[in-house]
Length: 536
Image 1 (cartoon, helix red, strand yellow):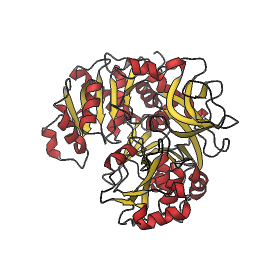
Image 2 (cartoon, rainbow, N blue to C red; image 1 turned 135 degrees about the vertical axis):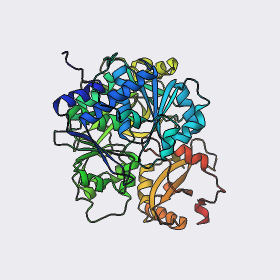
Image 3 (cartoon, helix red, strand yellow; image 1 turned 60 degrees about the vertical axis):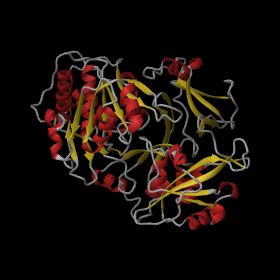
Image 4 (cartoon, rainbow, N blue to C red; image 1 turned 180 degrees about the vertical axis):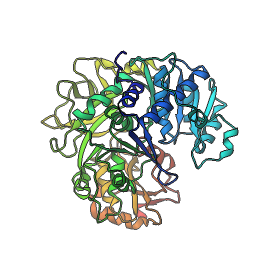
């Protein structure tokens, strides 16, 4: 028998199946909604083959797309694994997507089928009539779903209840084929679908776990990040399956229960994105905060003001890194680079430059756009159906990240702001949102805080007035005057927000990044939930 190429997700599973079929490889943590779901490699592989057979029965073939709209469930893994058996493309869509945006994605990727859960079915039904080409909606019925829905749509449950199979005719074993289309957040327009090949994910499945993340056979990985996002796939799911180590996956991110989950399952590492770390840090301190099995937090966007305090409070070390679904990679090994830096590219493997608007390199300390590539290799980015956008993204032989950064004298890179969103400046000062968020986040009633800018009332070009969008802890009420008091006492005058915007929850993307554009759309000086500094 030919050796299996472990770059393919389906092959990873079969390797695990042959080595230890009854070992639990993944545990899906369901937050008490219903029992957690431990999955053996045999269960995962059999489920993938059964779904692949159902795909074939529908007539799906290489290059066809199946969209999934659900939170983190075992079926998220089954659908993606089934697709790689046939060369079918999985399109995982953030479960918070709805309306026109959902319709756009389903139409753009030319989805022939959709797999969703009962709670999200209304969103699919509301747009499916507008979408050409959707031939099947499969329901993934969880224990809390309405059982009568089984009569409305075919279910994944019925497929998985069939006898186990571990082979299939017409199998496709080509890691150069697209395995997924992952959509960007669409900050400046419609989202763009990034085509991901198995050869790309292989780096994170096979090289990064031991070289960069330092996973070992004893590592237990945890994530609450959505499996619709590249981070959860690259740092959690794929390494767990590739290495045969346990991965624990929550339905959704929980800042209040994360440590208890890690204690329950002995998790030694998890991954966070910037806003999530601040949210965890803002939780009320507990005496046992550092009494947990976690050794390393792999973070993309640790706010510098809380970096060391987070490590000390929770007894962990932070490994900071940088990456995007389109490509690019840098990391700051534990205890090596300066606090606040997302690192450097892998020496001899990748390279990065920081340039001005004319593509001239800028000196240390000067902000410019980050360009990256593998050493002497032209980067490849494919936005599905967008040839010009794809070419623009790699113009001049570099991946144009759209991130504005600066480097220090030793080449360590620091994130400043997104090019498309611009930086926050007020009265000539550059404002660091993370620091403002840290100070305001120390208010005892505030669970989440997002700092963003609106055009300055002064009309000064490039200047912003600051808005602090704040969400309370459960059962708490936020007094705006007390928030302004905390801000005045802890911040320089130009960093004190002009407005407090009280919200139930700060809106977030699939990667748990705060969506300030949504907050901006909701903002009005005259709104009942907006309070002015001058009035308090």
